[in-house]
Image (cartoon, rainbow, N blue to C red):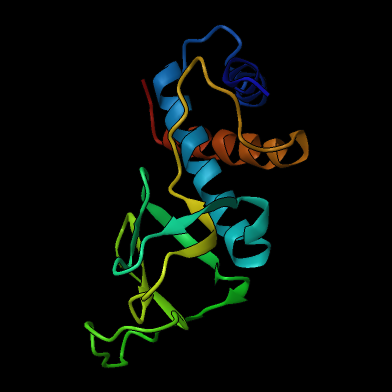
Length: 168
């Protein structure tokens, strides 16, 4: 559903069809907040619905796989068809150890690091959820219409609450 259609539905729900109560930019902010809330719920329950899969080959002697966008959640990391375990943050590791990767961790927002460092060129497959991209007036919702209904209701409630104490 387009952002313009979502705004029309929010304005209808909040009795603002004359477009005097809320600016489009305020409503788009509430829409983005609603999308963020739904993403968090989906990430906890069915993260694969938001996931993208990245495949490639990491050269021998390298352990960092970098991405263009920040990572919200790593779902699965596989090398040579074997699923790797996440390294607990409390676990001390020898960062120079080499061998067949058996674990991974996320040292920074845009990187997945394999452990130990591969000794051969290693094919990988990483399923992850990218960071949320904010939508603008020309954008489209990332969700099916059924989920958009919740985003619209959330944004309408936020708009109404923001106007609750306005006595002008």
